Amino acid sequence: MKNCKYNCLIGLSIIFILAAPFLFARSGLACFNFLGTGPIGDTIGGITAPFIGILSILLLYNTLKAQQAFNADQQTFNTAQQAFNVPGREEKRSLVKMIA
Image (cartoon, rainbow, N blue to C red):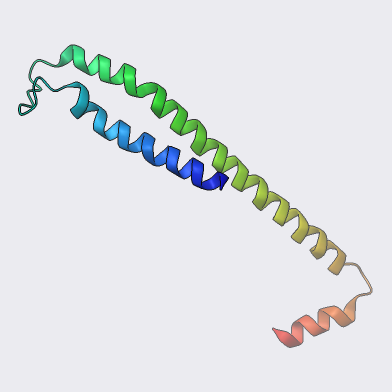
């Protein structure tokens, strides 16, 4: 449920970022004249910059969450590997060699 909200927000942000130049630089309904839109570029950048910033924060948050989950799994694996590598456990090591 939470993941769906993030994906929807990211998708809407990307659509808005892509549509903003067409929405804010139009001089009329049927005419797209970008020749005199120097100051409009500043306006578009000012309007879309917060959305791009929020989008990058959301993507960074999702990346860090995924990294924490991977690190927890890796820690569990390392703990199990260290328990397996205790001296005197030759029967388990030979079993692994037979399987491989």
